[in-house]
Image 1 (tube, rainbow over the protein chains, first blue to last red):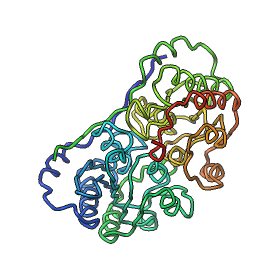
Image 2: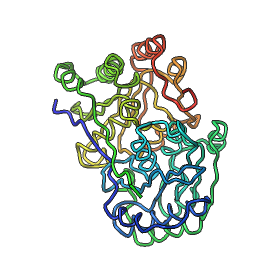
Image 3: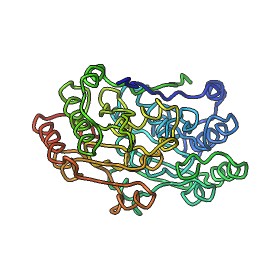
Image 4: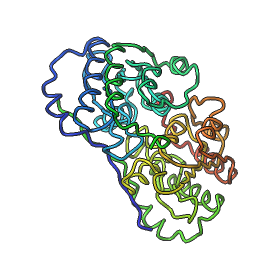
Length: 192
Length: 192
């Protein structure tokens, strides 16, 4: 057969300059979330994907390990949610699938993770996850979050992964609502 | 910042020749599963990842759209489960994140999907999923399947995605058990 052997995730070009100009501290979860939410808004502005942003950062020391935005429609990959992009780029940069190998790292995402991204978190090696907008706010904007266990955050906690939701959730939800008002693409097999 | 912008999934080289020589039909789920299980065994033999294989095939017409194997330890990406690789390569080949855009397609995987791969299924556009070994058989070999909703298969059915488990499950489970006996790497942040 003519085997298709390769696919890739590549950040859009606008991110280079945007991150060069981002000089704010990343010491608190609110400061970190400010960047994730800004990325979600910029991604819509540049038409490079859905209204979702994420970053991976060292819990102590606050070193930024990667940034991610939703690239489903531009990469043509349904797995290219902001969280998956950020986790994968951090792993690729470290050349280690286990982000917890060297230090405690945190995933910050502008929106509560969907069922796929929730399932990906324990395999990634992160020590904590922080999200902004809630599932309800994402769904109000037309997004489908999938089917997670009801006690999904508790299952992460039981695995030693700390969880914190609702950080800057109004700012995060505003980006989602604005996207919905402008009829942004809802990339879902059932809705096309 | 020095932004890491790119990561990729690339099938191992041995798959080219292996697929060139695979001349068996793919008309039934058992025939399709035979290939997925063979890929899981070959992946271990070639030391290119864990004992998991998957394919994406058109339900009618049986055209093979992609193959995938677990590449977590070789790609250094925790998302590189066989199902994610197969779905992404099929989407990349079609240049469409929605595999259901043109026809009904099926994901065949040698093992019941973990929480991440389960969550990824509805976003991919497949119409059906068929698995071999069960969660219990994977866990007996030391793998962690993550936390899925108890009625996970039913949630897929409700979304219009047909599910069928246990196809060639003895053959599939044998590959997992053999891997476990030989102390194959269990790539899990908690077990390293």
